[in-house]
Every structure is written in C-alpha cells, then in structure tokens.
Amino acid sequence: MPPPQIQLESSIPEIAPRTDGPELLVEHEGRMKRLGSDGREIHDFGQVGPVACPVAYDPVSRKAYRYVCASGFSSMKDFSQIRAFSMQSGEVSVVQELPLNQWVLWFLEWVKSADGKNGQLLGIWATDRPIDGQVCIEHRLFVIDPDDPNPKFRPLCRDAYKPLAFCRRRRTMAFSGAEGAYLVGLRGERIASLGADQLDTAHGGSFDPSGRPQVALGGNGIHLWNFETNSCSRFTRHGRHPVWSSDGQSLWYAGSSAALMRYDFETGRDETVIAIQPDRFPDFWKSRAPAISRCGRFLAAMLSTKRLKGVTQRAGGIETRERIFSADNCLCILDLQRAGFWRIEGSYYSAFRWI
Image (cartoon, rainbow, N blue to C red; front, side, top):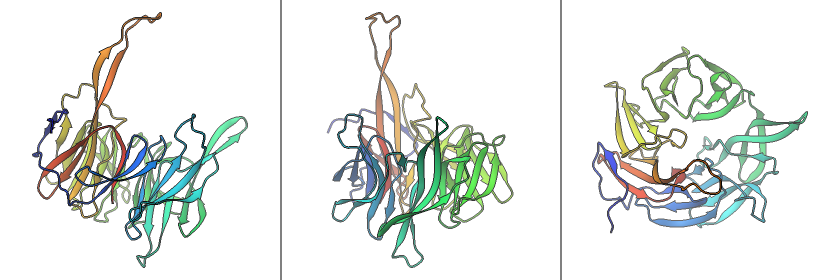
C-alpha cells in the first residue's frame, strides 16, 4: 500500500482502521454511498444531485431520507423529491414529489414517536414565490409520515432563515436570522432572541446534551448562549460548527476546513486534534461539522485544504496569470475510547452521518 499523501498533524496517534465499527452514509461526487467504518464501500445508492443536503435517519426501519434533485442543466430528467434509502434492501423509493419551485435543502430530521415504532420527518420547506417582479422565498416547517406522505405545514417566523441545531428533548430549533440568533418552537414561533450585537451570523450549533438551557454556536469563534438568561459568552477566537461531546465536558468544532479542534470546559483550553499541514490557504466556508456516532465512541470529521498546483501562462489576451489549485481531502475517523484515529482519503465528501 502506498504511503498516505496528505500530511496530518495530530495530538493523537494514527491507528489501524476498525472494521467492526458503525457504518457511515456519505455523499461522494454527487452519489449517496454506504461505507464501513474502515472506508470500504458497502452500497452505492446512486446520484442524489449537486447540492449538499442534510440526511435524516430512522434507526428502527433502517431508512435514510434526503432531498434529491436533478444533477445539472444537461440532465434530461427534471425532478425534485424526498427519497428514502433502505439500508436493508438497498432500494430507493420516493416519499414526496415536490414542484420545481420548491425544495428541502437546509434542514431534515427524523423525529421518533413516543412508542418508539413510528416517527415523522421534520424539515424546512422552501417555496419560490415571484411577488411584484421579485423572487421571494417562503420558508415553512413541515412534518411528513412516510406511510402517509401528505405534508403538514407550520409558518416560520420570516427572519429565521438559517437552521443551526435541533433539540429533540426540548423540541426546539436554533436559527440564525436577520437580527442575530433565535430559538424557535415546532409551531414556528420565536421563543428567544440573541441580538446581532452579540452574534452577527452563526454557522452551526449544538444543544447542551445534559438538558441545560444553552446552545453552542459557531461564527467568529465558538459562543455559548444561555437562552434562559439570554446571556452569551465567546470562549474561542475562531471556529464554526460546534458539536457537544456525549458527556457534555467538551466541544468538537472546525477551526477551519483543514482543522478539527476541541475545547475542554474543565481546563478552559482549546487544542488542535487533527489538521492538514501545511494549510497555507485556510478556508472557513468549506468547513463541516464533525459527527459523533450514536454510541458516542466514534467521531467523523471531514478535512479539506487547497494546494497550489501551478500558474497558467498568459495567453489569449489574458493580462495576468491565474493560480490553479487542487484539493487535499481526508475523512478522519476518531475512536474516542482508544484515543486514536484513521483516515479515508479521496475526493471531497460533502455530507456524512453515522447510521
């Protein structure tokens, strides 16, 4: 086996991949794939479209759900659907057909019922409505029972446009909005607000797993918002997409697209856990939230950085040379119990989740 091409700097050792760990759903080059924890491909569900969308998962039926759209302007098919992907049979089925002016891109969650048998899809349904010659996008909350795919809608406060986190225990959501951050209930009502003077625009969030009334938000650093006292404090200078550890003692987050960070509440310190080196072109927009497995033992983090490949020659009336970049991409899997990690290198994985 050739040596790894991507140079990683890590505070924990690199270990042999686990073959018996939980599985992953990833989107690789526009296709939905089921992978083993060691990166081996178990099943290819096919094309899901060019837009990275959240994936919901029902562990009882072992079905995943995702919004799927046409793969490009050259495609002969033009469609917009919510589809189900069966982990048992490998079959793909249509749950809901959407008109071409409607989509589900930013938020999709599976909410189990109290009896643990049935459940519903919860998400945000966006509709393109031309008004007075302008394009206006209406956002609504919806729920769908896959056995009765007639969506039920709730209005959503207009200035809450970017979902950050969902808390099943509290049945609330955190949003980034036009005037800061909001806590929103399942009826679409605003429960609490955090002004833009405290946090301008948030990128990712995570509710405290202990049930305390606080949510970690990413943006210009990692912030902790207590929505009961409406107080907010920043405890890192940089970072986006925080995810709380299962024990509530620390936060995992993206320092940039090329660095996985960890903040320890007990010591008040943050550290770089794994990073691509050298990272001469830090990128925050391509950073992704790490994902912790349901058992709490494993964590997946996508790292990506740009590398200068070359410079074009002046030609065809072009006055300046253009720099050409290539991407170094690495999906890192951490075994938190053994305090080690392994890698899956390859093309950019736009979305991933444990199943």
